[in-house]
Image (cartoon, rainbow, N blue to C red; front, top):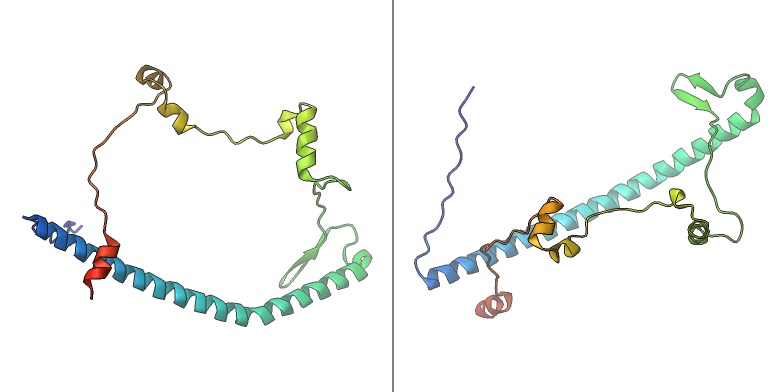
Length: 173
């Protein structure tokens, strides 16, 4: 097995504020280049999606027509094709009928009104409630309470940089 060697980054040396400012300018320039590449990629992807949709649309319509033809065939000959069974296996697939049930609201009812009725009747077992930790509320608790529930508040002093985009654009002239 070969030994993996970690690549060493060629890190530029920063000795002065001017060096740091120059590094920020280089970072901004590279970020602009990345943005241009990403925009070009998105445009290419959009173009390909449009071309693909145009090519696939007639095929999808043809498939839809053939599905309708199969359904009409199966409905017209249901008794003879599916005597005592729900499906029939053919060389290139299976055709048949499947029992399915779906929940729908009755006339003049919406799912919002159904939810209200369920709440009124106390049928909370029929209502989904997404539970998640409220981290903002946890931030207001003291350290002992946080420890009791298995959390701690960690403060870090992390390095950051911000690019001054408008000033960089003004320097290009």
